[in-house]
Length: 246
Image (cartoon, rainbow, N blue to C red; front, side, top):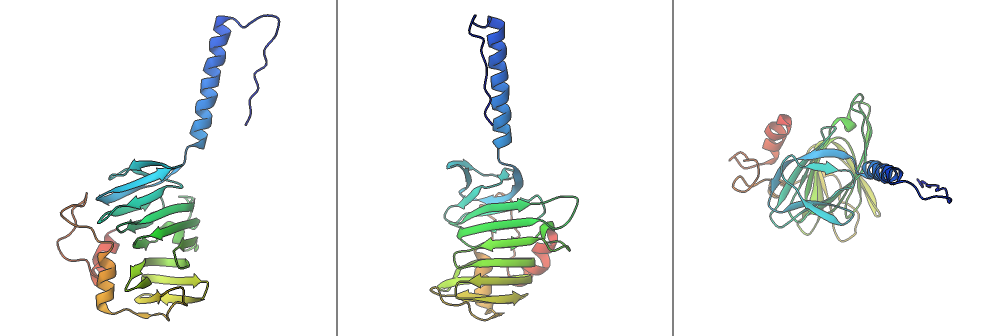
């Protein structure tokens, strides 16, 4: 919005008028800045190691209770972990050397449904759906290095493992759409994508791979901002103990 200030040429404005114009200009600039400020869409629940967010190329360190803003580029360093809860109850966990952006967040707290889009450029992640995935079936997309995940009532892990990119569904239903094909998975099933090939068919993963996947998003009790349980995090414990508690 452009605002023009007209001056009368015969005489310069008085000191009081000039001060009034300056005050008005400052107020308008402040209002514009506030209107342009990104909205808060969530907050940090847990942090381990080097974690930060950036807006317009300006980084800021993240700690527990720090706000997560729309459009934030979330980053984790080596051996770091980040867990954030969005306003609708969605929980995002990012493993080490991760990069995640909240691209779209449409949510009305008075009703279920909405729209959520995320981009995960690197690192392992765990997505636990919130109210946007409620009974009305809000639309959720997760863009990954190998394709787009369409999720429904879902808890899903994704990341690089065993020489490829893997997706493991812990609850609900997930479709992975890639340039080479699409696969739909349900609870307990996973897929692997190798070197740009079509995703493998939906099938249960070996226990060893599942436990290694879970380890990529588990917090270290000795260094996390919030102490974790001493019992190792496994697929079964994640489903029956950790996720219901959230």
